[in-house]
Length: 450
Ligand code: PEP
Ligand code: CO
Image (cartoon, rainbow, N blue to C red; front, side):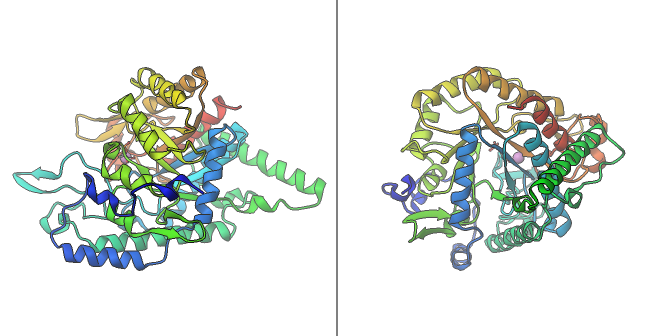
């Protein structure tokens, strides 16, 4: 049995006795209660069998026997819950995973920031424009982006609308995969047209051909089709930020004698809500899912130690991921003491690098952007530093899209500050476009084979 099954003094709502930051202020409490009760009555999105299978994969990644690819939008939004968007995101993640598997010679665990990534932490509760002050946009699960009083008012009904869209997203992903979309014999299903003919496209197609040849070869000499090559596993994750939403679908499963959050396989705690005695850590300590915490420069060694002792008291494999996000300029100084502290505790964790959130900057024109060179530099430094400390980087966490957006500067196509306006579509943080995302995957694959 799992530790969290027995977390002392814990209940799905025990977080309510702690300080819960980054929660919306709803005006109508009765409407919130109704929405949460309705949400709690709906069937779950995922099952404990899937969650337990993911725990095994995370354990393998901790041991260096698998690699985690976690990626998707900074924030999904309701309008973009369309078949094209879901297909393109799935395609880029499948393509990247193929490149990583071929290069790293390890299974890749595919995890989308998808099917529920609808709530965002904000630096201020309100936003002021031309003297008008309104609640900040907190993600489509809470309110809308347009700057008018009605749209910005947190609406509890959105909890249900978000859950429905998350379910539709996951349902479509499952159907695509079960129907053979991810069949390795037919990678052309998930080809994204590389505009022009970039170096990445050539290298990618060579990898695809090599895999197809190997499959053909194996199947022809054994005379048996490789059934496992027809479908892949795909997992979902989101920031477990809106605690009433997370609580509503937290169930005690009799057959496991344990509590699970069934809105997603793999929820994470954001950097801003990772206080060891805060409400988010209280909620997370009692659920049995594999969980992750974002670790940034502000976290002290003392806090990190308390976090780990609270979230993984029995030092279980597959339980806890630390996603570090320091910024290219800080990683080399910040990561070593953190790795040393974890090594001293002797608690297994999965180390994942998020090279996005420590590298955000604003241009003179007011665009929030990230430089591809910084993203790559942080990732490279993460591999290097872990290795030098006898630790293992077991995964990467990226904000990306399958579209040709212009939100991050640089990459093979050399996007400049001036290009940002062409297709800047994110509502929150800048994402790698599909070429930049593929370039990151090729880079990892080329430089970090076992
Ligand atoms: C995010 O992942 O979108 C995010 C807000 O990250 P962090 O908590 O690391 O700042
Ligand atoms: Co983000």
